[in-house]
Every structure is written in structure tokens, then in C-alpha cells.
Image 1 (spheres, rainbow, N blue to C red):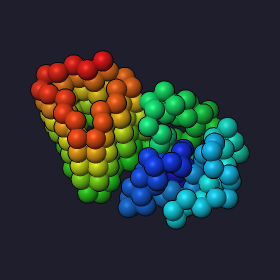
Image 2: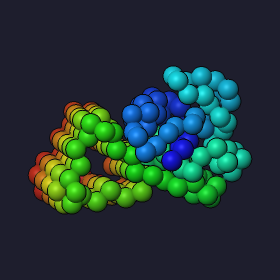
Image 3: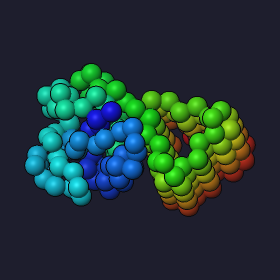
Length: 176
């Protein structure tokens, strides 16, 4: 599936790199409101602004909202859906995801991340590099899990929760 990355900042570049490693997704460029159309960002080009997604949709079948703020991610996903773009699940080929885990639309799982059995990852959640979401943990919509975080067994995270790099959410803890 050809995919537009929504956001050309640090997280957008990271997600683009994950997409480049995926056999089933091909990034065609970025939609970004800060960078001018035609600007090169890594190996990809900014195609236009996010408010022009309807015009850009002819280039792709899907979009990945790749900004750190959960509310902004939700707004971008709504624009993408209104433009007829799917919100695919993107899993880095080095990640380990249990077959019994549930990943909702628009989830991104970064390099070397682990998603354990029975874990539920809500729509538009980002699980960064080397993060671990243990068995039966539940992450609501639009959470951001930084690199090398541990979300321990049966933890619960409310919508939009941000867990910064290296932090631990303990077993049975509820955040938010």
C-alpha cells in the first residue's frame, strides 16, 4: 500500500524509516504544514500541506499520522479518513508482536519493540523503538510510548497518554 506520512518532523522521519523497511507499505512522501511542498526530508519529499490531503490522496491508499501529540494525531487521522485514505497498522520487521495482541487502525510499532500476548494497542498509538508492552496491557487511543519504555503486565493507559523514553509503567498500574 502506498502511504503518505502526516508530519515531517522527528517522529514523521522515524515512521518513514519504518515504512521503508516494510514489505507491504511504501511511503510516497510527507504531508506537513511547516515544510514547503517540494522540500526533501531524508529520502522523501513533502507533497503538500495536510489540509490538501484530498488532492494528495490520488498518490496513495493510506496515511500514517506521525506527530507526537495525540490530539493532533487524531485530527490528522480524521483529515486522512475524510480524504478516503486508510489508516494502516505499521509494524517494523524487527518488532515482535504476539499473535494474540490486538492492534487497532493507525498503530505504529517501531524497531525492536515487543507487544506481548493479550495486549491491546488502541487506534493511532505509537510504540517506539525497543519499547515493551507486556501481556494484557491496554493502551487506549493515541498514546505515545517512547523508546525503551516498559508498559508492564495488565497496565492501563488512558487515551492520549505520553510515556517518555525509558520510563516504566508498573504492573497493574493505571495512568490517566
